[in-house]
Image 1 (cartoon, rainbow, N blue to C red):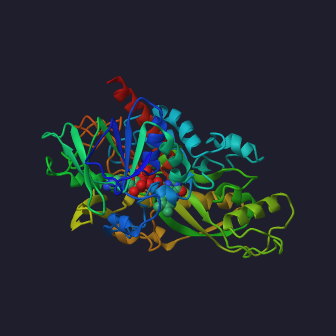
Image 2: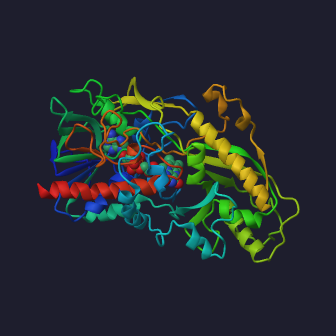
Image 3: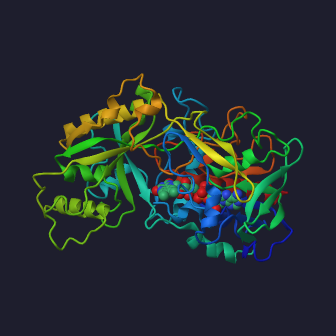
Length: 516
Ligand SMILES: Cc1cc2nc3c(=O)[nH]c(=O)nc-3n(C[C@H](O)[C@H](O)[C@H](O)COP(=O)(O)OP(=O)(O)OC[C@H]3O[C@@H](n4cnc5c(N)ncnc54)[C@H](O)[C@@H]3O)c2cc1C
């Protein structure tokens, strides 16, 4: 059932499992547990559509590197940011999760092999056709080599596209509404988390509506699935028994905020678009109606050798008409569709490659290393339901800069050798090493709306917030879902991994709760 907390507010809700947040992670968790022997209540702050007052509960401060406004980098209504995500994602590589001596902080406390089986059901939630992530068979299917590069520095990896992007509330809301064991409570904002004196057990949640209604929710277990800024914010606001905030005895909550910095690395004078496009084009439709594409990234071998992070290239496509030669009947108005269509026509020999090709902007998407001072804290300002607002201080370090330089150098070499084109590197890449780091990055540096690392997973409570099951260290019935638990974020968009971890968590919760 879907209820509106504001229409008929109960004084107390009793349930087995309370999921806070009806975004991608919260909906996937409830969907997976539909029909099980568990009563489940999903608390969702928003309605089923955008509402300005509810969205303004996301307001906060930004310091450090320029970042998106906290009210625009996520959506606060049923479905969460899946209501406007772009749908591009992929798997983490084993190398991304393994211990790397040059990357600060703990590695993932679970192995890639333990996570891998959950990627297939996660892909089904996004309705991908097939489950391929290996470049060789996919490129073979369109008659191209998966590794066009000599040497071992660059690799081609696979992105999958949820196309059109999966809107979780629209797609799975009806299933949750029909499930006899699930209640979704809209308009219910969690405002406080009550615990025993030593915080070893959560005793209840206080929920509030914007109209002033209040209620208590009591469950056997609770999951925070409110996104990577809001999960730490809720813990830091829960100070009744723990002055530093819940789960924060070791001052880890909110630290290690990581993004996937998107940074322009130069302009490419292309020489062979037909050769280049299949490997760096951002549209999935390079061949027929596929939902995958290749992308060029640093190989694990070179990352290890050079002690670098992960990084991949994005090609910003020229606008329709810029290349010419496609004729008035060319229907594409979307740059991705245009490029893909053009590529097919070149490959099919239907049009000659134009003589004067425009310069193309190359953008890089980088892995960010965990940094304790890149973090979420609280301001003194309170929102309309009484929670202190979040402040994000985003920092990048020398490792990210060195990684960007490495990929730019390898790409310049490889693209030249392939005859694909010449790279004119962006001036910021040449700034001296002793330039203060926040002055290093160009003005058009951006994040990607991926809020990772702020309640990271670790074996040791001194270095993280949740244990390998996603349970808050020191508290026996509070779990966290979403990419705030990632200890490191790789270089691929996080949603497929968010879903894989969430489905793994669902099985764990069913095991724990159905037994007792
Ligand atoms: C413009 C944009 C494009 C993106 N594109 C991509 C992409 O191409 N690929 C990719 O992998 N990722 C992308 N992302 C990121 C992706 O959308 C998020 O990582 C993902 O949706 C996070 O899901 P979540 O469920 O963890 O959190 P959210 O989607 O943030 O959901 C949190 C939910 O919790 C609710 N909530 C918050 N606070 C409370 C409270 N106190 N009480 C009750 N409920 C609460 C919110 O209303 C919301 O519904 C994009 C994001 C944006 C903004």
